[in-house]
Image 1: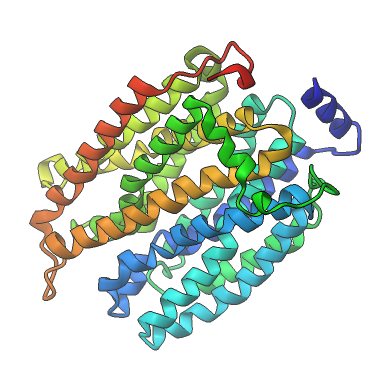
Image 2: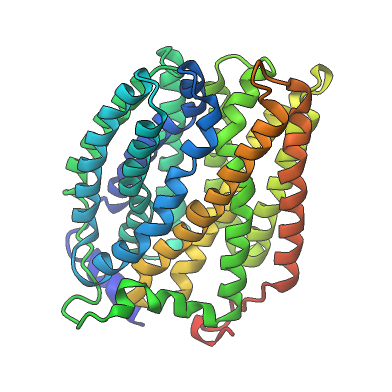
Length: 419
């Protein structure tokens, strides 16, 4: 009842064209991210830093672990989400502009520190964008995927643009990302006002540590979801850190454009989410998304051989199922389960478990596997790439089965009654 009243007030308060406005926010946000993160490994290889790829991709996860504690409290108790989003993008733009110097100086320490500082600004914006969208949209199960699909478009356009422009393996990707980040900062100030829901209430130490959001884990289904989300993000860290290097090693040209096919499939599956949501429900969509990670990595392992090269492209095209059915549905699920006053904290908590703890473990583990099996110091051992991919494939399959057996969420009952 409270939710419906809130959305009615929102709709009548001048939030016209809310879906296109939120869609542009998502486009710019993911354009910024897609500009530099997809081919970061290639750029580092060009500057003799391939041994540090795993560490570089650990910066974002560590930032995702730290940011929710402060950000969740700030958004839920003090500041409007769109203003925090603007500030973080201004600072992020300045940091991005300085990263090329670290690469050109081949200073690994400086590069890792700058990437950490930047991702400390950027990773919270994922939860902030979701919070603004969920606050402004009614019937979020249907409308949020329509908004979020423009984030995918932004990632696709970024990948194709840097490929066509010939800067995919150049430090110029960071300069482009800095410009778009600054543009997003200015645009954020025009977004629908998203006030702090608990503004004016006394602040306790429990607020700093997002205790109310962590209290959601008293619900068994949310605890199971959080653990499985964290675990499935370990294989995800492998994909983000090493797919570009893998495709390049096995002879795929224009890697950024090839990887953008995955985001193209993401558009299709994002649009069918509203059609499948009521029919399949949260549990089955999450399970299918997790199972797709196993299928993708198995295809990567089998596609190394020339006669089965088509499996690589099929694996890339599975990205739509992998990402949409797990992460988008996961954010919708968290919004349903969280109470109104901790929605910001709940979104930050999901980001922390997935992009934070899970991907940190994934980046470190995949870095160790890459240096053990593939990177031989004097060259790349392409023959060991299948073994590299079979390890996260088997892990994803085990996690999916455990989730299916232990996650019990009754969607036909009130979320507060689900135990």
